[in-house]
Length: 208
Ligand SMILES: [Zn+2]
Image 1 (cartoon, rainbow, N blue to C red):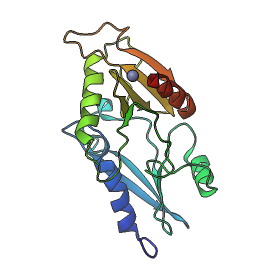
Image 2 (cartoon, protein in one colour; image 1 turned 45 degrees about the horizontal axis):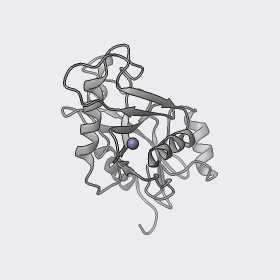
Image 3 (cartoon, helix red, strand yellow; image 1 turned 135 degrees about the horizontal axis):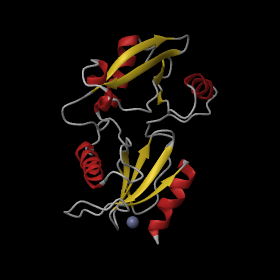
């Protein structure tokens, strides 16, 4: 993209990411606020139901930070929720926070993982929704992930494992049961990982 972005272009870039982020059928991700800075914009987002404040606490998806858009480079990053936004902006400006979500600068996933991480123009939105729906179907009260927001990142092509991203920079490696009856709280078998490095290491174990 040549030249500096204007606010409308920055919003459009972020909306492109929101459109491919999994959400329930009857809802949508919307931009709720834009703050301009000297380098670009902070763009806040939530789901429409929460924005309209019509549905109560069930409609909140906690743990999302704003998107940052650089006006010069058109680079986009989504803040996590583990640190303050200011801290993450400082890291990003120093080049110490990788662009996320972004196809560049992403770690390649080890074999045999099938990458489901969203990128504009991909065709995996239906797969992501299916992985989210199956997880929610299998989780009973008492399970470690019950009530968590989980976004599928990748699926193992050798077994029924899926890795999900959780709020606060955590990841869950889940062996889905695909069983018909309700699962016991011990299932689906789940390992929660507290860094991307740990997650990558756990993914590597499926290549053997
Ligand atoms: Zn596997």
